[in-house]
Each structure stands twice: as structure tokens, then as C-alpha cells.
Amino acid sequence: MREPCAASSLGRLTKRPDFVAAASGRRFHTERMTVQARLREGSGLGLRFGLTVTKRVGHATERNRIKRRLRAAIPTAGQDYASIDADIVVIGRRDILSADFDVLIDDLRRALRAVTKPKSASPAERSSSSPPSNGERRGHSHA
Image 1: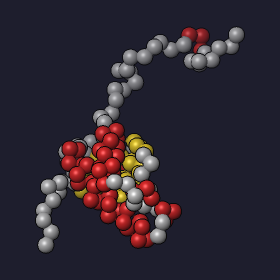
Image 2: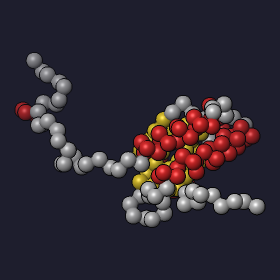
Image 3: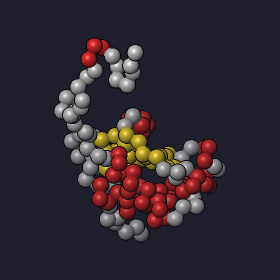
Image 4: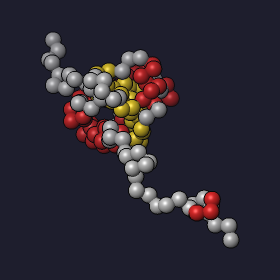
């Protein structure tokens, strides 16, 4: 019998449109994985994860081992971010098979920190230098 997981508030992505939408969001790359995320505004669903491991990575048994390792690491890494409304897609690579489990958790935590940051201020609110005068582009001089 399964014991209830402490991080049961983490959901799963199961529909292709959710995976495609997450691909249009922020990305974070390591040598073991790529993490894509799309922040959702006010849906109340919390953090939802989806896993992808392509056939290029290896045979089915290797791909399944990669997904099992990621499924085991996600609750530990995602517990601090469970209240954030976001869809996360983790694209696993072959190096996950040989990586230490603590390294996987650390990679996921770094990725979640990077891709779940709140959106930065709009361009009008940002302080930037004044636009170039006389219609020239920045960094180009026509002397």
C-alpha cells in the first residue's frame, strides 16, 4: 500500500497542449536536463510537472529508468515551490542515469528557482538609457 506523499499538491501534465504551452515559456539547461516552464495566473492548480525523454536518449528501459529517477526527485525538489501556479516540463538526458541523486535534486531546485521567477517589470517601468538620437541604432556608428 502506498503512503501519502507529503508533496501531494504537485500535479502532473498529461495533455499535449500543456506540454506545448510550457515549451513557449522560460527554459533552464543543465548537462542532465532541460526544464521549461509557463507561469499560470490565478488558476489555483499549483505546480504541475510533465516528463519527456526522447528516443534519442536510449532504449525503452533506459528512458523508463530516467523517468523513474526524475519522478522520485521532483517531490523533494518541488516542495518549496508547490504553491506557485506553473506548468513545468523536464526533458531528461542520458547523464541522469549516472548522476548522483542529490545532484539531480540540486539541478531541479536551481531550475525551478530560475523558471518560476515572477515576471520582470514591463519595459515602460524599467530604467534604461535614453534611445539613441538621430535614428541610429545602439552600438553602430556610421562615421
